Amino acid sequence: MDSYVLELLEKGKRIDGRRLDEFRKIEIRENVVEKAEGSASVKIGETHVIAGVKAEIAQPFPDSPDEGILIVNAEFTPLASPEFEPGPPGEDEIELARVVDRGIRESKCIELEKLCIQPGEKVWCIFVDISVLNHQGNLLDASALASLVALRNTRIPKLEDGKIIRGEYQGKLPVIFKPINVSIAKIRENLLVDPNFEEEKVTEAKISVAVRDDDKICAIQKQGSKEILFEEIDKIIDLAVEKSKEIRKLVK
Amino acid sequence: MKRGEVKLITDGKRIDGRKPEEMRNVEIKLDVISRSDGSAEVAFGKTRVLASVYGPRALFPKYLQEHETGILRCRYSMAPFSVDERKSPAPDRRSIELSKVIRLALEPAIFLEDFPKTVVDVYLEVIEADGSTRVTGINASSLALALAGIPMRDLVCACSVGKINDTLILDLNGREDNYSEVDMAFAMMPGKGKITLLQMDGLVTKEELKKLIEIAKSTCEKIYEMQKNALREKYRVSE
Image (cartoon, rainbow over all chains, first blue to last red; front, side):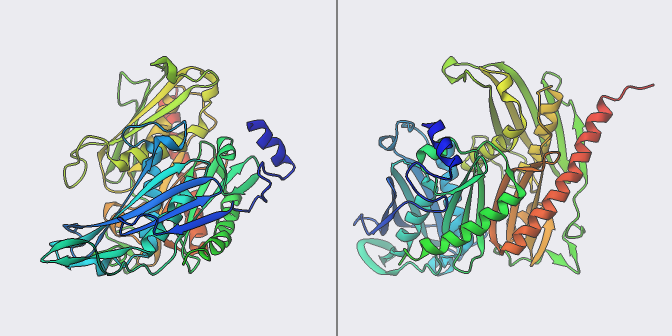
């Protein structure tokens, strides 16, 4: 399979017939988990992830006593792929969660200052949990997209005497931007948007770029065990900004 | 206090007196650990990181072995006393991610395929943290790998760049790291002109990003000379 991917690439083709700069079909479903404060299911091709948001009351961090807290966590459920094993989170899971976190946080899309209940004492803590349900490549873009959509439909629970009333809500979570993550793989001299599982296996380096609505870049992460060239970085950033616009249109 | 809200530059001077594109004092010590196959200590100002290399050595359990190539393992760890509030010695999520990105930053430089079934272990210990620990650690690792006699395509040089109070800066210290609007960790093989680490967070325009990469590139080229000089000095034959 590896050599087949490479052979086709030499002719400028991909194994699933896509153009190099083409995403697979993206399917977004909202509010897929009623118990969650917000949720989304995202499929990119056959890659499938669910993100669910829960809100809890927590003590704020001492350096931001009047701001809510965002925590992103990812789990590669062992049912999603033969490579995934049960157990504590591995480095790939941790990296994915941290890259998704940075994209959301650095875009400043959540108005965390509106999540203060009692300064210095109580704030809302927003947990985004990502479950990977089918791994056919590019988990990062799918996870970032599912997290964004879930956050955008998240409702803040009602409070009574400082306690959360489950199932009743006081309003929406304020999410004012749509940061979009675009991952681009380098295979030989080709740059491929949204690499699938087979392509990822022969990927030399991958760059993930999170782009905000105003085309500002809010996070970058290089992955993969080979190097990347300066002129490739420029091309990747331009391509990511362009593709982010396309994906953003899919988000309500 | 939040990112971007702390005044970190006054009259063109940073809190430690540096100009925006000025590096802290760099200190390099080689062969600091006698039992190690190769070791180095690199300090950028108060940030001080030790790196020690073991290998190529036999890899066990055997199922971890790769038949076509050797493997590289990296462990980034912070000493509990290296930061303001004691850090638990157990690896946290940040250390696990950093261990991975450091490994990927070094891997392109090493001829691992020359040592099938073996492992090269790189252990990094942050003795004191004042910003830019991962890049300091990469510089130390590059030297330690070279000293261990591991065949390499090139040395790997790394630095951090960022943006504070709308000014692009080089080599972030701890406070700048915490309150910067943007920070970027960057590593490359200067002799080959190839990038091996690129991580950025914060809001930048495309133009700013380009400029940041330029500053990082020219700095890595300077660090390259420092690394080479340190190695030359060590192997210099006295007349």
